[in-house]
Image (cartoon, rainbow, N blue to C red; front, side, top):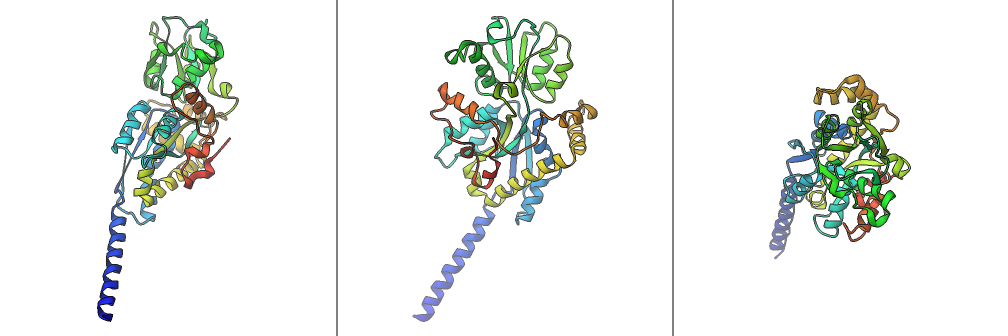
Length: 337
């Protein structure tokens, strides 16, 4: 009986150990990350170029993790890919995160952020010098946004319209919005005779337009919100975090390291951006990175007004009570202003 009990105990222990080993091996051996166009995604570039995720995974006992990235033009495709399981980490603006957070809240796929990519202003440019308010737009004007109705620029357009038409007039300019990537929007606004007459631009594109003849600034996001605002963030599903705790922790660590690297040596960061974007000028890129309005910071700043707007306009049932609602427990220290 004693031998049988000993054998049973040993068997259970072996099963437990094998189960633990299987669970360890069950973690993914690939991290698939998205990014969009623009300087705000520099931390992603640093992580990929310097293989920070691979390094942090190796430190966590996962030496064979491969990292890949895909560049997409808008948030809709990324969120679809994230929920379908063909993407692990998505990047984009507050509206895209808010939409997915609300849609998945309380489910195994609940989406939260691992932090912000930084604070950058969006400048609302036009080629029509007569446009000062939303009431000045005509039926012939077209406003470029990365994705109609759901992108950061689309929400900014609505909040801009509300200043002229009131809360119920938030959608007055929606029919004039057109989905275009930042590079295409910039080119369109600088092309004489283009149907695009306005565009919410971000770095580095806003600096090109600031020098372009016949292009005028209407307003910018910092003016609208009264201070720095988080432009883009990184997020994933709770399922990925639960299924891959070591890999998840490694990505979070790599993200922090990448942001610190940018702030420690901005010239090197500018050189990397130009290497990846050969059409960009190093001197101009470095000037942009050193612009006091632009900070590479993982803290979430000014994110609630956009989410509240989305709740007030019926896009989501309820806005988050705090920026903490958007963050995983490991990064609660990223709550900003």
